[in-house]
Image (cartoon, rainbow, N blue to C red; front, side, top):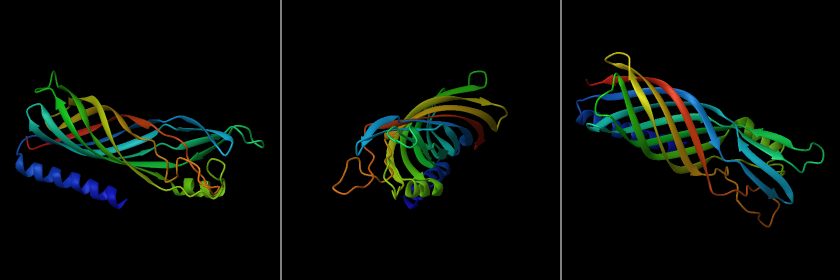
Length: 233
């Protein structure tokens, strides 16, 4: 959490410095939307077959945009999103295909380059964006308690921990002006990063402890909409 807060403060500091240097149009936005995390896996732990996937959840983002050139801006944002992890035990003889859902809360700090039309077209400003992310995936208190009581991948007493993962994103959207100072923004982005393992190793050790044998990467598609406030015009 401390690293995530420090990252957000850096974004705020950079934005504040740029605002002082640029007495022109800059923007603050607030968005809400839907977060879908694609990272479906099938694997075996101690001879038992499992499958894991993430549930679709909500997303909330605040941020700011500062112009660098006529059609180029830099954007900083902070997001919170919820995508719970569902693990299916295909080998459970008592309850076949038993599914356990673990609460997962995500946080993200992003710094992006944003290319947009030089002038709005009938009040609409389309844009494309690409940038870097710092992601934090944390089990909720209920999710962590469930892993200790019912286990994770068939191993009781498992301790799940937050994962901090760097990644990148790309996407685009539209901004439609309502007034001189207010606009509506519609945004779609694909965030890509390594698969979270919640502090667990990806292979078995000499002792019988929980592990999460997955690899490669995941992508988090976020669709959102919200309001933009213009300053400095």
